[in-house]
Length: 417
Length: 177
Image 1 (spheres, helix red, strand yellow):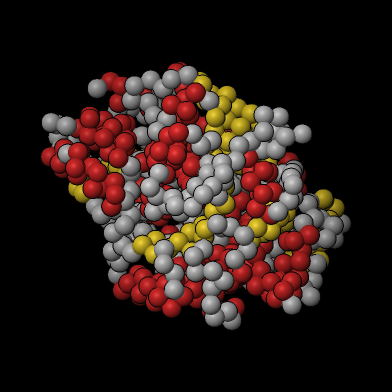
Image 2 (cartoon, helix red, strand yellow):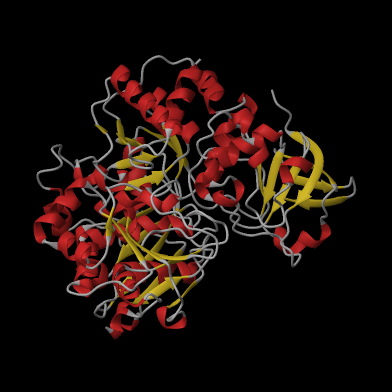
């Protein structure tokens, strides 16, 4: 009997010949990703009575959640993180301005095919787009990983998602994953490893693959993975210095579920308030009034996403009364978008440019909503009250849908432009 | 050693329509506007304050109480506060049809007992807030008001060991000596 990706990669890490779903293994992860919550993790770490981290090269720390600090409380938290980094001799530290942890992490070469990554953020599975096992963990656990260098994991059961066909124009990876979450629901992949395969996945850029793995967290996935290919290796070239061996699922692996999706038949999708699995084709909500559009985040803040929006906005202007917030996912993305003229196009169209970071996505600063307002966002969560008022609405959609809607001031089907 | 069998007063988290609440996410449990709070003892008052109909839960709950909910309890973010706020209130265990993956690990590792009860949704009408429920973590046996028996999942080996040690850190001390 063959092994799934998760069974195989965790067997290798645990020094076992094979594992099966449900088995509990102890592994030494290759990297531990933490962000603004590092200060709280450090406090827990000290509370255990440990003085030094087990391995300073294990930690990758990115300040991204509330950057620059919105008030004194956040400033004190950032200060504590910087002090911890200096004290422990952690070299992979990225201060404010570098970008969102899930984007900076691969850009700086911390993920490679076959790696095992854990991170104290629920969107850690993003790194699975590079053929890695990447799972979100909590703060307590992150402190324990810092102290011991090890973690216990239950080998997840696996779901294979086969996406065939070719995506129509102005339909993207975001629409694929929204459709899938709508179908599987918020707990449809609970504690599962999701393997994305098929010609539509092969045709996707690395950025689009990251959108898929990023949002798999919204159906409960432990990790999500795309098989590495030439595109993956080309993207990682010059970033990853250490040797690696890609891990692939066996052809006769056993899956808890196999799903097939036809990309050719897909329409742009929207997640309606207040759950990510409340998904409908955009045609069901066309005409809904919006006050704000957010283009960016770890889901859709990459160069390809900004380009897709700029193509629709170039030479035009957003509707009166609509606020368009643009947040590139990282400094590298911002620089590339500046060099291409994409940022100039967006600003000329009326966009407000924010610094690379999580921005308004988690409602801490930079674009919170008042009661009665509505935002169309390219981010990954629309929980009630997530972006300010509990009485505000969040719709999730693709960059093309976001741009088309910003132009009209109401939710708009990007295929109609 | 902590007890493997506990008895407490039950809170059944239902929607206004009477259905057991499914997909209670981490923003409903501990809203992002309170994320700057990192001291566990200060988290109690905010537990469930963004869950419609349960905004006053923290004022009504007493140490030793049990919580019951539907599927995917704790969906969403990895925030530890969504677990720690129940520690702050002294909640003895959470019983649900299923739990969000990260939430489950957070709770297990911090020593908060989570009881997974497959099939709970079908028998949920038998439970009411105020019932006295006994649950055995080793066997998964669940008894309502001393008479009616149900079967939930027993703890896994590692879950039981971490719970008995107190939390992941104490467990680590036991394992590494």
